[in-house]
Amino acid sequence: MLKEVAGDILLTKAEALAHGVAPNDNFANGLALALRGQWPAMYKDFRHYCQTATPKTGALWIWSGVGGVRIVNLFTQEAATSHGASHPGRATIENVNHCLKALCKVIEAEKFKSVALPRLATGVGGLDWKDVKPLMEKHLSHLSIPVYVYSTYHSGVQAEE
Image 1 (cartoon, rainbow, N blue to C red):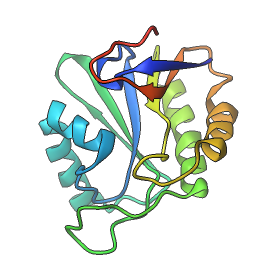
Image 2 (image 1 turned 90 degrees about the horizontal axis):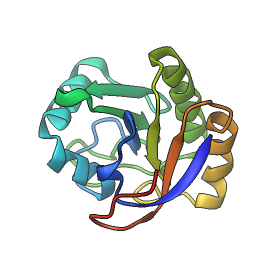
Image 3 (image 1 turned 135 degrees about the vertical axis):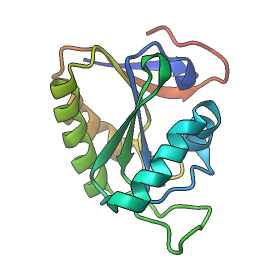
C-alpha cells in the first residue's frame, strides 16, 4: 500500500530506503548527497560496485549497513556525460519503470516489511511527478507492506508513517 507522507526521508523508520541514481553517480546533489553524508561507507561501496560491475540503467543495487539499514539504489538516470562529472544524466520514464519493477521483485524476495522512497526521479532526475506517480502506483500499490512516498520534504521532521 502506498502512503504519501511529509517529512525528512533520512528519519524514516522503514526497513529500506530506495532512491534514484545514475551509474557512476558522484552523489553530489539532492537526496544522494544527504545519503552520502549519512552513510559514507555506502558511497564508498557504491563506487567500488560501479567500477567492478558496470551497472546498467533500469537495474538496482542494494547496500546493507550497520544497524540493519538497507539502501536500494535505483539506476533511474543515465550515466554522466563524462567520467567524474558532478551532475548525472537525466532520468527516463523507461528506466523508472524497469527500476520499480525490479524493486517490487526485491521487496518480495527480501521480504521487506516497509520501504520509503522520495518522489522518484523528479529532483535531479528531471521527471515530472505526474508521470512518475502512476508508475509507482502500478508497481508498488498492490504490495501488502507500507510503501512510504515522501512527497513533501521537511528537513529534520519525522513523517507520520
